Image (cartoon, rainbow, N blue to C red; front, side, top):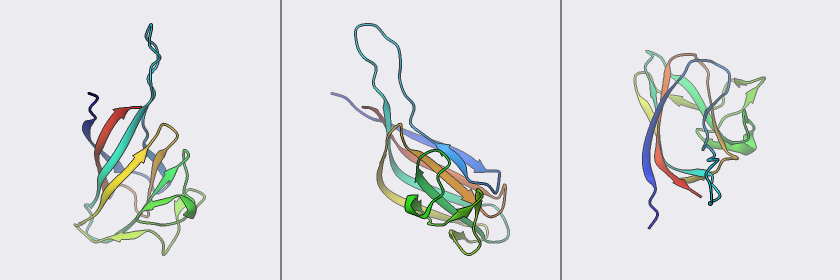
Length: 133
C-alpha cells in the first residue's frame, strides 16, 4: 500500500519581491516502469515575524512567479512589478505569527509564491505530505 511521507520546510523571505517558495518535483529515469511526478498536500503554514514591527505578507498558488489576485492562496494580497502592494496582504504582528491550516493539493504545475513588504523579517514553515502520483 502506497503511503505519503510527511515533510517540514523552512525558508526566510529575504526580498520584498515575490518569490517562488516551493514546488513539487518530477521523477525521471528508471527502466521498465515509467517514473511518476510528485505531489504535495499542504496541511499547515506558519509565517513568523522576527521584527519589532508588523510586516505584511501574501501567498499565491499557481504558475511560477504568480502574484495575481485570482491566484491568492493564503493571506491574500496583490503585487505590482513583483512588490507587494500597499494595503494588501495580511499583517503579521510584531514578534508573532500567522497560521494557515487545511489540506491543499499541489502538483508539479503549481508554485507556492510569497511576498513580504519588508525584507528579511519573515520566516515561513510549510508542513504537509509528499507522494508519488
